[in-house]
Image (cartoon, rainbow over all chains, first blue to last red; front, side, top):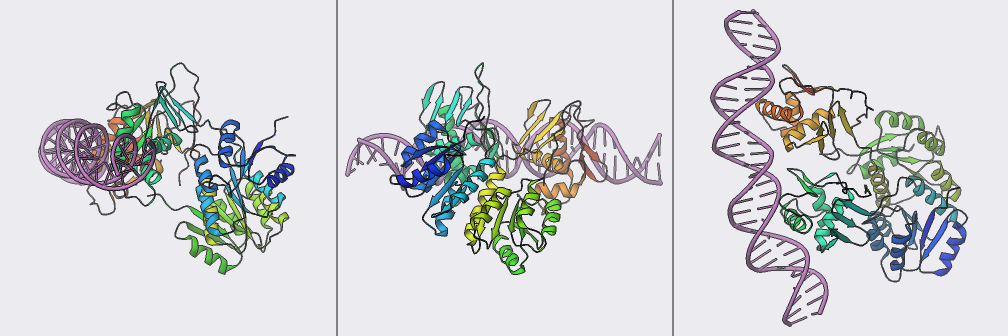
Length: 240
Length: 240
DNA sequence: TTATTTCTTGACGATTTCTTGACATTATTC
DNA sequence: GAATAATGTCAAGAAATCGTCAAGAAATAA
C-alpha cells in the first residue's frame, strides 16, 4: 500500500483548517500552516504533493507567496479565497496558481479539482537543488556555492542564474531572459544582460573568459551546462 | 517566429463561438466545432493545443466526449457550461477535464485559466529531437551533435539546419530556404546559401564532398535525408 | 541624513559571424 | 566528350556580436 499523498492547507482561520482537515484526511495526509512563513518552512521541509492556499494571510500576500513558491518548485497550488473579483483570479493564476476556488465552495468540487492537479503532477519529483560539478544552486535557500564557498550574488544575478537553472541544459534566448528578469515591457537591448552575465561569471566561474557553466550561444542566448559531478552522487535537476 | 497556439472551441451556439473567437483570436489561432462529432474529427486532424468545450452539445454528452478524448490524448480541456451543480463539475473533472468554468464567465478569467493549462502542457514537453544515424538535432536545447560531439554552429548555419529538420525528407527549394533564413526581402541569389551549406557540411558531415545528411537536389534545392540509426531505438520527431 | 550596494548606461577592443568575389568542382545537356 | 550551367570551396574585408571596464544614477541599509 502506497502512503497517502500530503496536502498542505494554508489558512489563518483555525476552524477552516480543521474543517478541511476533517474533509480530506480520509484521502490525504494533511499538513497545516496558519501563516505564509510557516507555509514556506513546511513546504521546504516536508515537500507536500499539493498546497491549498487561502489568499488572506496575516503576514504575507497570498499572490506573493505563490510567486515565491514558483521560483523553486512546481508543487500544484489551489488558491482559495473569498475574493470573487476577476482581477484577483487572474493575478493568482498568472502568479503560478493552478486553480482558483471562490469561497464558499463544495468539498466535493475541491476534491475533484485536487484530483485533477494531482493526476497531472504524477510526474517525477524534482530536487530544487542544482548540482553541476563545483557549482550548486539551492533554490529554496537562495544559496549559490562554488567549491563549497557561498557566492554572494546580487538579486539580478541570482534571477538570471535561477532562470538558467530552471531550464538547465536548454538555450534561453536573450529575449526570454530579459523578459523574465526585467519584465515584458523591457526593450530588446541585450547590453544590460551581457553586463550582468559578465558579473555573474566573475563570481561563479573559475576563469570567466573560459566559462564552464554559463555558456554563451552566439547569436541566440545563454545556456547553463549540465556537468556531472566528478565521482559524486549524480543528483540531477530537471525543472521545466 | 513561433506560430500561434491552436485552440478548439466547441459550442453549438454560433454567437458564442464567434464571441470566443473574437476574444481569443489575438492570442491564439481558433478552430471551431458545433458538434461532438465535428470536435472529434478536428481534434484528430488538427491536433489543437487546447480545447474549450461546452457541455451542451446536440449530438453527444460533453462528459462522454471528454472521456472519449482522454482515451487517446492528453490535450488540455476546459469545460464551460451553464450547469452550476457540483455533481456536474465533479463528473466533468473526473472524466478528464482540466478545468470547469460556469457561464457566464469573464473572458479575462478564461484566458488566465487557458494560460495555466497551456503552461502546464508546455512544461513536460517531449523534446522534439531529430535523429539520423550519427546526427542529432535537439531543437529545444539548440544542440546539434555528431557522433556524440556537440557541433558549434553559427546562427545562420543553425537556422538552415533547423529548417531542414522541420521538413526532414522533403526537398526545400533555394527560394524557400533563403526566404526563411534571410527574410522575404532577400534576393534570389543562392550564392550565400551555398556558402553556408558548405560551412554547415564541414561541421556535420564526415566527408563534406560526399554528404550523408544534407543532400543537394540539383536545380531545385536541398533535402535532409532521414536515416535510421543503426540498431538503435528510433525516436521520432514531431514538429508542428 | 550618509554610506553602501546594486543597477544602468556608454565606450571600446576582441572575437565571431556574415558577405562578397574569385575560382574549382561537379552535374547536365547536346 | 565538349560546352554550359549549377554547385562547392576558399579567403579576406565588412559587419555584427560579445565581454569588459568605468562612472554616474538609483535603490537599499545603517
